[in-house]
Image (cartoon, rainbow, N blue to C red):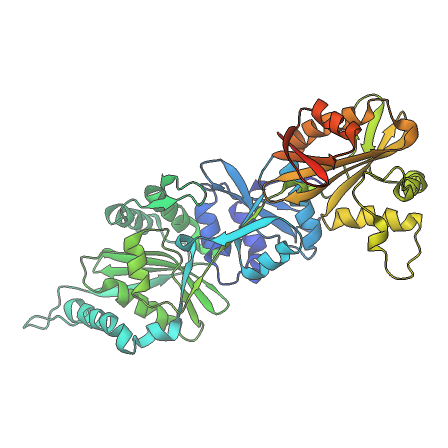
Length: 497
């Protein structure tokens, strides 16, 4: 099947909520709040992969400079099948090099078992700050002395500050809303966001340090989610001073963790932020163990503020890049070279022919591989041995062996192997005796070079031949491969695609 990605709207988010929460791993990126807020900016889309719409794949355009999609780890019971669908989609849409995003270390280990050539890393600017909620309930200990001080100052200045007549000009209250708020209050929230919005902050693109200003966008998305927060089962807390909004927080509770999606305060009120954090920690003290205040996006001021609250842990989000596009092939391709030549998967019809070619020591003098070295003690060689080897090597992403047919007759084998992390491969070819001197090898490799560049996105092809194999040496030169070096056995060549 082909993946059909559609927009991630409100109804779909509510439908996939439980699946998202299972895969959460304490990352804010799998929450309804984050996905809804950023779905349009990062073009987050979903493709369902079963009839019941229980399994799905998410993708997002986090590589903004290159306008390139990245994929989340599949939400599926059949990970291998889902990865194959992603691979097919990447090949069809020329998404090179394929990348996965928002991964935990368990996801990384599973991907390492599927792909052979890869690179993974995390960027500190995207790491979520995770705190123990019990630390915020009273701000105990020396490290929280400063926070306790500011909570006390806030209470003294704005809650307990009465004049001689017992009148306090401030009237601080925090109200929780879990239902849709009326338009008047919504407009007041918008005005508060506009008045006290953060300065623009700069995010660094992981690959090329391209600076992207999205501070203003974050404020716009904050307004959008306030319109629908109740439909996403989020809780909105608004802090008032009399009728004036001085703070708001939008939170999402998942199992034993609170995600603080929006935290906006009028900082003219001394101590308002720790007071608000302390209030939320106490409000949910019987429900949650952890408090996630999300990432700092590389903003130095925000980082200092979040570090001042002494996180229990940083939740790193890993990215995983496939470094050789041959790993994206999930099935043997059928390649039509010309009207006479096709390259195809080894089938039962050619099983015996392949066996005879593989054991022909005269034909394989310059092949460079002796199958007998891999035989186990007392192992009996048969056509099944070679047939299974071709299939298993492909499944294990070791190489791709394709049978050559010339005018519907078996002609030999071309193999693509030695996948390297510079997105290069090596090619070898061998023909049966009756198929020599028909220009087959030249036509096959010429077409493969084009195929590997245009369809697979390979960057470079290598070939080598025995120094005494003048025929192969002549063929490689004819194909315009660049000579690299020689050793005692081989001449080495490469072709930049």
